[in-house]
Image (tube, rainbow, N blue to C red; front, side):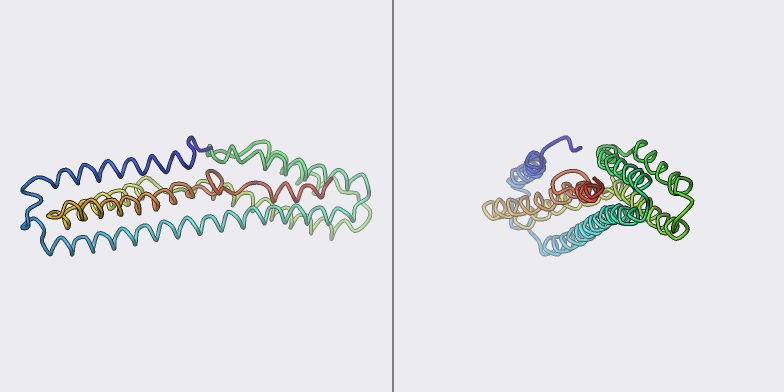
Length: 252
């Protein structure tokens, strides 16, 4: 789980950019930096170029995060859908195997819900894996020899494969986070952008302070959104195992 609250993260990011902005603001009070000659047209061009590069980088980063979130949501819903299908197919069985299959699937759902904490630590739950193996063993060798077993077994195996694939996708997506080099790129561009903003307003202290304040606010919001939603299964707005648990309720 995340080590700090969303509000704490927001103010931490705000403090970091604010310190940089304050240092730049007072640094540009130096006579050599705040003279009319210090502000040149090339500085305006550099600001536009750096701003465009930063905006493009953040757009790609945000798009990747939203895409990952959508894929994670689809994986969880697919896992829940497979649990519901197995429950429906189990109605064809006699009472004893029906109850046995429902019990195995319900145990898997509970183990999958507990797997959330393991995912956030970069691990897969051995218990959930074991429960999945138990369902496979039952479907392959525990069904009664009489009745519509061949067709039922085929449908159960197809659904079980879908359940296993959805879980594997969920585990894979949980490790898709913003990499160090991506953070280095956008943070570097953000710092360069602050420097160019201060340079453009070098000769006007009041305008420089306002421009830096606006830029710090914008940067804080953008970085906070990316930092908060980079992990689809933890933090504010994280996906929960609620769909899986809701599907498991029908097994009771």
